[in-house]
Length: 218
Image (cartoon, rainbow, N blue to C red):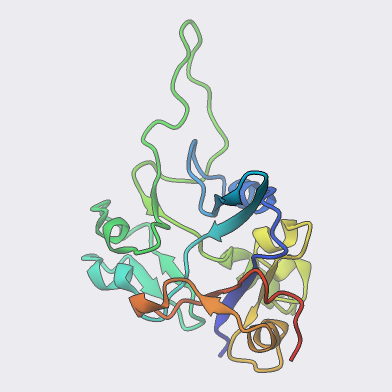
């Protein structure tokens, strides 16, 4: 059984937000809701200043604080490692939002597109239920559909998460963490990828290659 994961190369990331908007378009999230986003840091002292970017999404942890606090068991971990949400079971209590140490869960707005004075409210293109708490799910529908078609996630476009496909500099690599020969496993080994806040003990499935380690092969 594969365990899906992602590695993000912080040296390659240029902060273009292509991942952010690809995710939004793919999942049709509401106004102001982004399941993947970027923190933008400025380091140094003028005129020697550099900018670095830290993309954040659900970490699909092995040790899942969100799952542990969910009273209705709407949050659950699949056999392939993806942490998913059963919208029919979610009671909108927001306990998972509080428990997530990465702040990667979001409540769908009750009214994402308010009326404008003098104009009736327009229907909007969204699949999200108002009030439901949701997050990145690695575009699991794309993965499952791709596998059903005989495709391999991590190597073929139609079986990859939308954010991976959209990155213009290939900063994101997706694949099977349980396969030592997969590209993602090789990159984690050779470039010494790290976990974000490893001290939390959540054992995420999202890894980061810090600036300075990119491109290095052992």
